[in-house]
Image 1 (cartoon, rainbow, N blue to C red):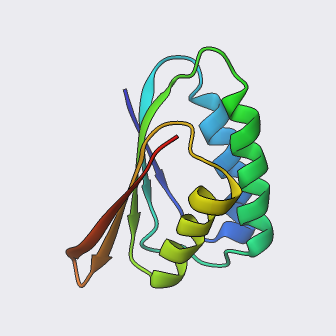
Image 2 (cartoon, rainbow, N blue to C red):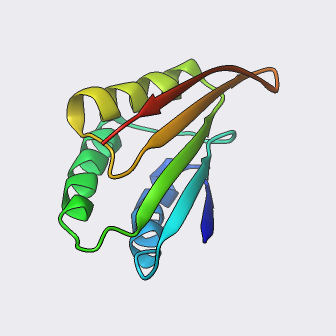
Length: 112
């Protein structure tokens, strides 16, 4: 099953994001995250999300099979790069598609 999350104002949506991901943990799923209209992201959220990923990795069985994240800002791309490189490895493979003017500029895959 494919699950879709669109991120907007993270000041109000951050807790909902984590609750949504937890609610998907009932059967195997792929996750698509859209960040075209994301705003108000803080470094606190990134480090807290790293802890959230660590806790999700402890679950057995692991239902998340793959994640695709659509990114339109170099700032968001760099936050994700730091999250998956230095703070926490992903649960399942993550493809980050960086778009520039509706064209894919590059694709980066992070592995568990």
